[in-house]
Image 1: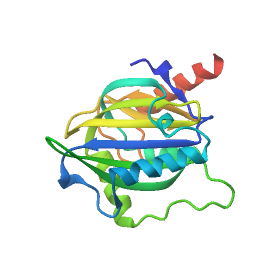
Image 2: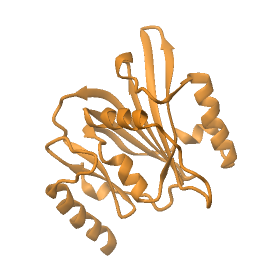
Image 3: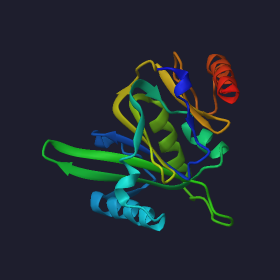
Image 4: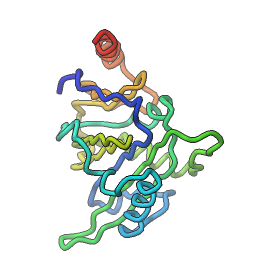
Length: 205
């Protein structure tokens, strides 16, 4: 993975972060539960409000594919610090022939003036924090011309040493190399130095 593949967030109005897994025991508490038809309708309604077809939320240009051993512990606060607020958090369940599949979704959006962010319980926040910190994932990122970015996290691997951390800094999403799991409020010195170098090269370009 080359750091020059950083993704510009300046045109993003919505960021969907979706964790896909099969273990019911790790479904976060404190979040609302939706069935898949209800979730599809939720996404469709949001897309129609933006004047686009609902499929555009998940079928844009894939800018990161199969990024291995990726952690997202610092992603939520990074998005908030760059002007995107949490407006929805829920888990849906899809019944399949070989067992149930779960999707926990965090939706972030640039709020309109006076629009309140999501009020989520401390339990929900703690569950999402643990969910993001105790495992690494394989990451895929899609960018859509309607301003919607989708970050898909699959193949959960608990207790595995990460290879990358998805970090948000100065309006960019960067997959930075790392050798350990980070805390939510932490960016280690190695990542900080790499980000400064990379973002400076982007400004020069």
